[in-house]
Every structure is written in C-alpha cells, then in structure tokens.
Image (tube, rainbow, N blue to C red; front, side):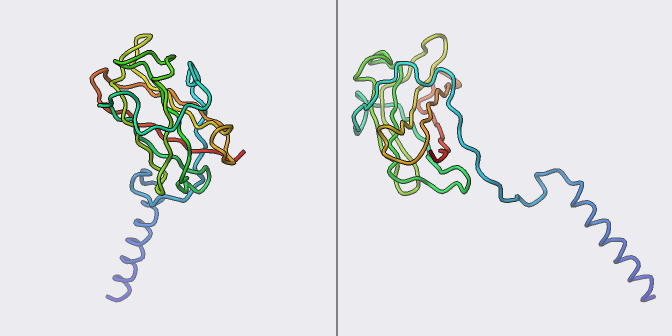
Length: 166
C-alpha cells in the first residue's frame, strides 16, 4: 500500500507542477520586471507654456486632476517632481495663461490639482500634463501627456508618469 500511495503522490505532484507551467498568467505569481518609462503622447505639448507657476489650484476648482510620478526601472516614487497641468475648461482656453498651473508631488509620488471642469475641445474632453526637465531641476527626461476623459461629465482625470533618467 505504501508503494501505491507514493505513486499517487508523485503523479499528483507532477500534475500540480505542470499545471503551474500552463496556467494563465493571472494564476501565476508576478515576477519583478523593470517599469518602462512613459512615452510622450501625441498632442501632449499643445499650448504648453514653459515655467507656469506653482499654484494651489487653477481657477475656481471643482475638477480634480490626480496621478503619480515614479522612476523607470524600480518604480520608486519621485518626491518633489514638478508637474504642469493645463486644459480647456469652463473658465478658459488651454492657451490662456490662467488655465495653466504646476504642482509638486508628495513623498508617495502623488499629485493633485483642483481646477475648473474640463470641457471638450476638438471633440474630446482632455487634459495636458508635463514633466519638463528644464523647469523640474531633476535628472529625468521631459514627458508630455494628453489623457482623454471617458465622458465630458467626469469630474476627475488621472494620469501617471514613469520617468526615465536623463
């Protein structure tokens, strides 16, 4: 009986091991891989105004632009990263100086900007964000983002940066 039990355990063990090889990725443990840098999005730099001031909010607020900034490779949060934000809103065009403002990330790499409601322009409600190396003072490459909202009624938009070292 010991021989039969040992054979059954061996077969069951082999089946379990091979199931791990062929299981969908969702059931396998994650492997550590380097975090790829975020590429600049087409149209992200439209109406960019270099050196917009750091502000508590843009206009009267009511809409939230949030996100994170991380380092490519290890994904470590970047504290103090300067993120510039601008958009076409209920209070102004994206080319208007008062529609632009910058904020700094906290210790977790997160940022938040309160601004007026974004409205569609060119058929899409979207925002613009930039990490501009020239004004950020960091050792990372410049990245421009242009995230599109799923609906013009959304009251928040999220964007995440993964920065490559310069």
